[in-house]
Image (cartoon, rainbow, N blue to C red; front, side, top):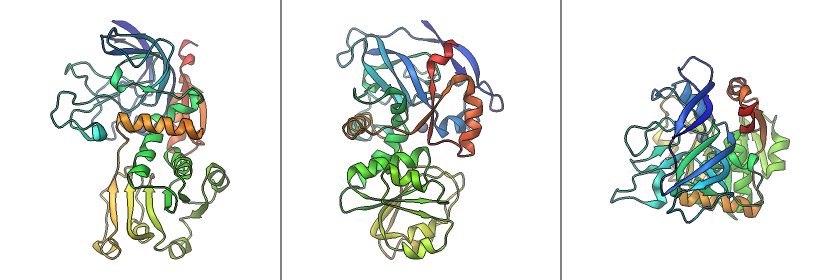
Length: 348
Ligand SMILES: [Zn+2]
């Protein structure tokens, strides 16, 4: 066992605080990683505040992890000491399961999440990336393309794949009109990736306050959803709308913006049930779907795609000591566009 230092939540109502815990020594199929940066995802906040009613404390959050390999087990072939690597939202899945589907691994029942989950041994709690190091099975470690800066790459591990996977699945590309609903941590990644895929990209945001950023990051069009005219002007326009906002919206109004056979895909989870009229879907054979991160295979494809197109996140770097303040700012959408923790600050 090796002692790890990090920040943890010990209770839904307490701020994150310094925390020491044990990580296993690498097994034959493990990679040990010195964590350099970790992104701050809205799920971290939902989890540590027990808003999804599944928190098991203490919790070291963080699933947008990047760092450098410090040791590998004897069976590891894909990585060596010194490699730049990433770890995303899960660190194991139902490896022994007959129906294991590597293309849809994230939807398998045996998924072990990077934190607030239990390892395959059935007892050890997983702890995430707000910490100095992590030990992960080789099959759940991602290679980071050499040209990408590590700090701004961290958010690709959750925000990036969350948008890349549905954009690929619903064939975003040349000739396709794609709308990204919400211009935040998830949405701004969607704009960059959809643009690089060759789609015609529209941002639908509450106001026009981030319009300049949106156009700079690759959007072709930018509309305010607070303006009722947007919905008349854009009726029947889109092949695909990706909804990144985790709040209640007028779902029927947005479904009306889809073309025949268009799909609206939910990646940001609103708290309440979604009221949808059948007649928002029937005329136009429209679909309302959901999508969750991506498989390890697809996450690596996403990283390689981002490497090829020089895509990283727009970030604000913080020290771990600023994490509680950062959470408050995330809740107020006061960040352009993702916080990334510099883990060197743990030593400060
Ligand atoms: Zn996340």
